[in-house]
Image (cartoon, rainbow, N blue to C red; front, side, top):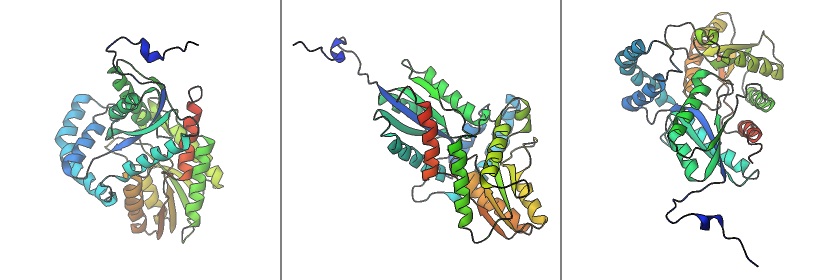
Length: 348
């Protein structure tokens, strides 16, 4: 009986080694500095704030503002903010710690779906870079790759810039992997349920009952909305669905936007002004959830849990709670897994 030779035997002499047949999943979050010192922060902020998707202004004017003003003053201030939340045991930001864990747990969860799947993680700005992880997946034989931006709500400054960088990297590859990009999941039932369950669990563990619950999303300039960005509408739908899942109405559940930067008008209402206003009107107990963030980071751990808590108490409030993000909890992994498994159909 003749047995067919393996495909490798048909390769000509000297053919370069090539691996294939595996499926890669790359989860991507926004980014993190490598350290909290001035120069590490400067490198990170320069990469982030040089992105034309993030800052949509005249490039010549912005180059001057960024290099002559922002990058001389902001690195020191933001470095001090990062220092307050830094994971000293691993000498890295919490966002990096959590995203790594999300990838590891997702990989374990998907092992039973298809043994060919390899899960990796990257940051849009900072390390590990998208370029390095796409190369690593390709070297492991992944000729099909699903990229999942960890942003429930789509924005040009987040989801689109991940795609920009992925496509830029693919431009440098002779043998490009087949690519899919997971869609935003702002109204996914598993996501809404996981956030609602997380909120309920957190509230049950508090020593007080919040009079008001705020859902705070990252802000963006209002002009981006008018230019066609769907972000505001997707945040509003998330907030509506979350409020319904929690059984809360307009009187005790609010949507706000945080982290504004520069002098433009941003999406309203502003989180910090709302927090102050509630305290001034006599609200004594307040909790804030940040459903737009897949993992706790500077904007949740420092801006909300520290800065806005101080705003609230200084204005007359008493009890303040920042509800953790889904992070690498069972619920958080269930959300990522649900999206990934749906997008892998036909591959895995």
